[in-house]
Image (cartoon, rainbow, N blue to C red; front, side):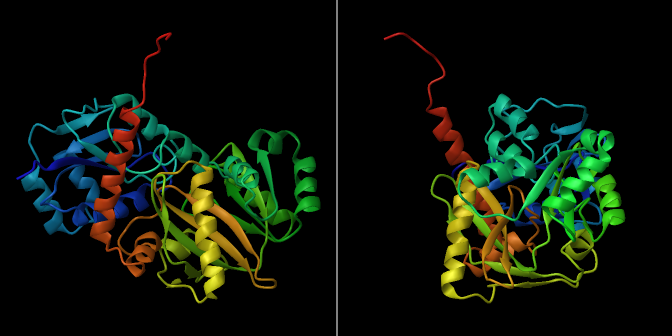
Amino acid sequence: MSKKLRVAVLFGGKSGEHEVSLASAASVLKALDREKFDIIPIGITQEGLFRLGVDALPMLEGKAEQEEINRLQRSLPAVVSGTHRLPAFRKEEFDVVFPVLHGTYGEDGTIQGFLEIANIPYVGAGVLASSVGMDKAVSKKVFAEAGLPQAKYVSILKADFKREREAVLSRIETELGYPCFVKPANLGSSVGISKAKDRQELIKSLELAAAYDRKIVVEEFIPAHEVEVAVLGNDEPEASVPGEIVSSNEFYDYKAKYIDGKSVMRIPAELPQETAEQLRKMAIRAFKAIDGSGLARVDFFIRKDTGAILLNEINTMPGFTQYSMYAKLWEHSGVSYSELVTKLIELALERYEEKAQLRTDFAVE
């Protein structure tokens, strides 16, 4: 009988998406195959403290079933515990890390860089893809270079808005007009995003976004259907069927995603076959453009007036409960949630082994 892999599941984090991460992690912990994996939960508090093993379990209360928490507690080795500012991650302790972290300090390349230095395989995108995917201003430039169509946008710095408010407002009004959407460049789950219909609302929206990030992205309003595609793989990724979001609010904000429960996911989206195939191809192009690996959810707009497809953004660690769009898209594409979790670990190990074959020395021939 082969030895079980030791999987460290990272969750929580110093992010506005802390609570979303806890919900995602609870689903992952339950879905992990106990015949294949030994599981070590690691919670990161909003203050940046790492809680290992049994000390991480209280963070899951209210997110995971108590029976599941008790089962984890019984299976954990007593030696892996404690609270640390920055614990030592060693290959002797973990075979692979599953960072179920959304937003800053988790989805932006920071934890990925830490795990690269520790020389431990990890699930999901690497340092570059994570940081580019997280920064909407940078990713838009990368997608433009790849020839992917997008909505018009303006990227501004918080410092510029403070110093040259009138010039910034005039530029947005001239280039985009009203209504428009204002977003922090480096955040997900629709945190800090708002719709501005006039100058007064624009000022409030910019101030809100600036509270979350030093860089702000403002986009033109597109009357459109919001459609999402899940991507899975490394160098030869596959795309799921597209799914459509029918929001309960004026746009798909944090409340519509996680609180009121009234938004509807249509899977598969009611689209012509040709459009669905085009979306899947564009999703893979976007994934490859940022050098993605493991997983990503790629979000699109389909204009209601012309039917044109516009790339919105890419998420390298999307919401990951069994009821999230990413998981449901693969379920409808023939991959169960448990199979999906196992596949992502296999992809992490595949990428690690491939990188291990690269030379790190140099000798003159």
